Length: 252
Image (cartoon, rainbow, N blue to C red; front, side):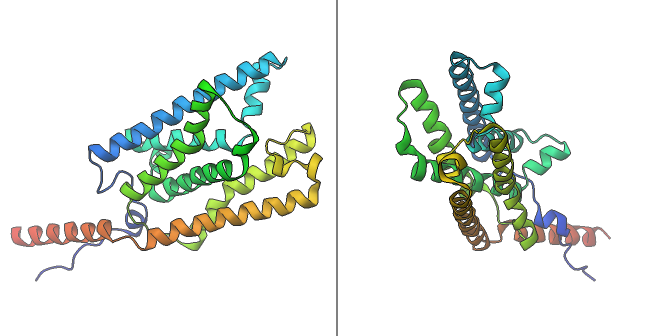
């Protein structure tokens, strides 16, 4: 009597590691390319920031502290680490965590949000030239676009609970809370739409609610696209399990 097909465990079904069924040269090369661009852009931005602030009398640690105030820098660093884990597949717990589809998707959403926020709200505020312009475009346009394309092409459909999707909000909400706390201590706010000194707390709170609402809308869009994807990974897993059971029965 043939045993029923062996289904993948809930954990493996919900959290396949990347790359999964697309673990060919294209997906690995794409992930490695995104990681390389992210690392280079982050290093270049660090160099620019340190040089600029040292010229104004600040120290290196002051420059690094100022860098950590910007959502772009933090998100690009997160993107670099995650896509490095996707490309190199380190067998560590943190490596497996950072290449899980839910985590990669959350980071892609953060990256796309950074790109949209900059190009819609901040691009008109300054016009960099030369080397700075190249770095600026890599941070705010190239990486968001490449990350979104990678997600569309190579990230398989995954199961996402409401609780797990709400965890995606931890990063932007924590950033807002920490930035407001740091601003109250230093009087420095990295973006004009959260500058309490210029706008006051009431207007800044409204702006923050609007930004979180825009992030939630973007998050919902990615979740909706994910749920409309074909079940290739799950179907493949079931087929492999069925074939394995058939082989075992034939050998009995």
